[in-house]
Length: 288
Image 1 (cartoon, one colour):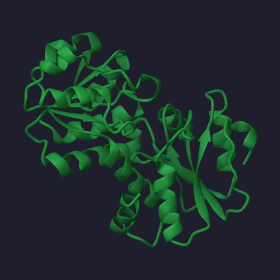
Image 2 (spheres, rainbow, N blue to C red):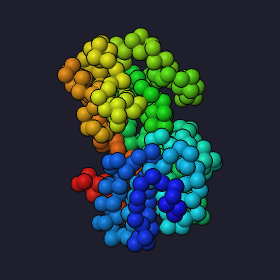
Image 3 (cartoon, one colour):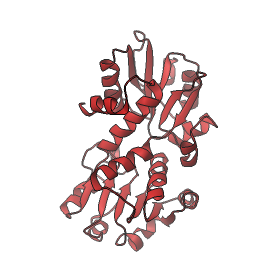
Image 4 (cartoon, rainbow, N blue to C red):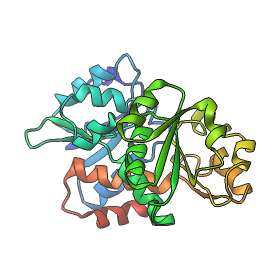
């Protein structure tokens, strides 16, 4: 690959094949390489997932370069490029990813071309059900409608009693119409906050340089029903400011750690096509 297209340094010369997580700065603590590499190691494969930090002006060139590199098997797409990569792939994405308009997983098709899919939505719903069971009777509020938000909203809207998407742009309204959900502007949160059963944070507020911030104020969280569940898909930190405040208010919470693991399990199977089943992959990754 062309190393001048990335901002960090990697060494893949010794590998038979390699996978990658592509984003703005996945080298700054992304979890996927640890999870994937544990399975590569257990499987005796001379393959490693590496982080590729790339700027917005070079992402397309990097994708073109990786597409032509036979040693690249695929991998994960991190913020903020899930929608960019979906657009670059054109028609080479699964029906679910096409509906969402974002991909978080790249893999090779039988002809060697790059394909994309989205494992975020499925992973989010599986994770929620593992802890809180069915959402059929629940009213859901989704905060944010980026690549991950679209994936989560798509799956939750299919199963929940009702779903409202909260965003700052009209793109959120268009997507809400597409999946038969309601939409509200960010300024209208207070009009709905005391009626919902589940709040899912799909924004980046609470992560990175916004780690000390919460998408909801203490007052808004206090206005939630005590039976409400707050699910923050951020996994680093494990307890975001949003979850910290919700915990103190006696509200049930769920972080993004298990969702991150589950999407990695699904994505690994797409890209590697291993001789291990999902349970075996999950067992190895769970130990990390």
